[in-house]
Length: 244
Image (cartoon, rainbow, N blue to C red; front, side, top):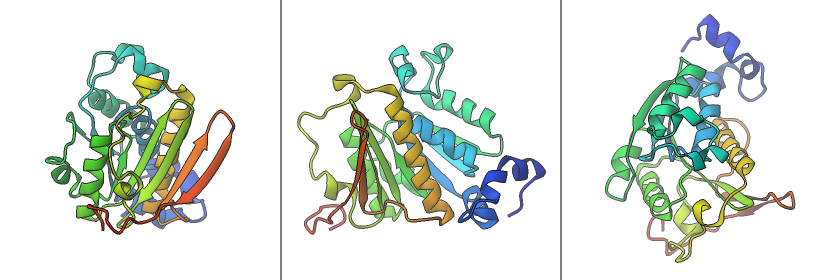
């Protein structure tokens, strides 16, 4: 796989970077990443993946842009309100890097549809704030053997984890919490979305380029109010209905 002169200049800082270089950038260009949820996590993640030169990006979201999104979803502008999130995002990503192919899916994934949508992708990023969708995407990734990078946030805290085989997301969250704290319910500081979205993109880039030590089987947790961060290992649940 070769690079055009434009790509060589565009990816110059990757091409000279230890642990990426030409081979790693070629792997990024050949990669296909599905981003589920084009909100506060998926939006920044998709921007950085496009900028990094991931060859094909798939965007999944059935929502439209609203004014309340703009406080944290930096991929949108005021003029985008009322329009499809995936279509607006596709335009911005293509404008950022015309070498990236973008596919859009204006839909909400379920246990019935997730397997078909996940099939054929090299990695999935889940940036949704709905536990049902997270469970469906996780189950589909386990069945297909596709690595999953999960990012979540609420109020002043955020977390990122990478799942590949065992343990899976269901080991971490066995059941849907009865009183789930969504951003709409408890609020969220806008800049935190950029942090979590960027880290999910970083973990995806590491995994795809074969660089460093991804957060596989580990959960990175950040408390933005105190500035404290910790990483904990996720235990595989032998009774997990998905990967057990």
